[in-house]
Length: 298
Image (cartoon, rainbow, N blue to C red; front, side):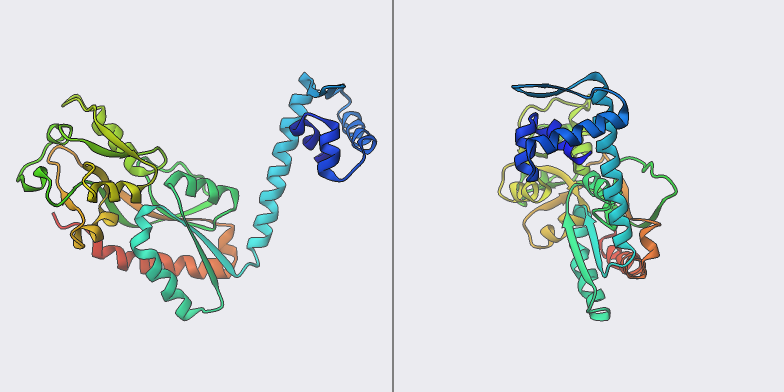
């Protein structure tokens, strides 16, 4: 089946043979065995290469799904004994993860904590695929996860307007969405929570907005604001430290509010590993304490 998958993806028996270190005749025999198993012709073979038949498309999709399931099973078995914890965080985790990571290492120095920063939904995909054990992030919509996951709410974030400290909006006592749309904005590509807030504002009937600068990630977005490229809607928790460093100023929009819970998420299966369970418990407890610092006083 691996040979069949390789031949399909390469579109050639010769290319598959080179990649797998086999002869073309051996590749052909393997494919014959797969066709015999399914009792159907799966490939049209010509001098130009191979092409899936209609039956072959069904078989190929099934084989790909089987291999993916086997990979996930292998990762799940490995996670039962691992002493490495893989944590994927959204931007909201940046201000607190180093404290959590170093604090836990002081208690358990032999445990390896690996941290990956990504968009919220990418983190969730990595968790589902077994590439991450724990996710720390906030999401713009309710999470539709089944009961194979453990979800704990450990705090809240709020998406707010940030502007350069010298920006005209920073001097106003009252700011509305219409005011915000009158100035250039630094938007962010899809995949981060703040992009959904931006969509809400840009689709608002309260004004038209035509000038913007696009950033690939939330840190580039904040840097763009601090450099004077425009204003932005972003995470309060993440931007608070930048405000304390006088790089940006957080401004309240009176007719816009977007508060979201911050979640720690893991798979119940992963919690069968005592190392992952112990770190998850530490992360949720310490995370609540650290996030309290960022609770916005309105």
